[in-house]
Length: 56
Image (cartoon, rainbow, N blue to C red):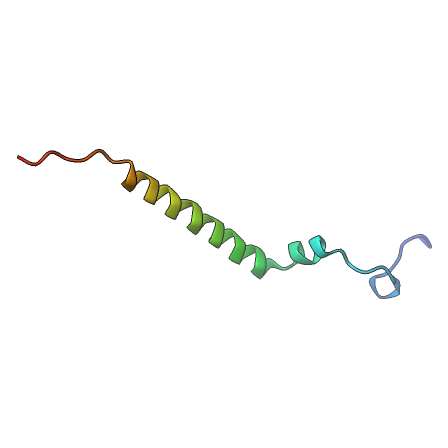
């Protein structure tokens, strides 16, 4: 068990990607932002591609 290192004895910096993926609030915010952007873009695309209605 001597080859296992504890977190406080490690001198290597934590990679940026690991720090980002460990932050659950950032992941929640990114997930909501991505869904908001996709559904907004999808809705705008649907509105813009609707055929014009003929009025009587």
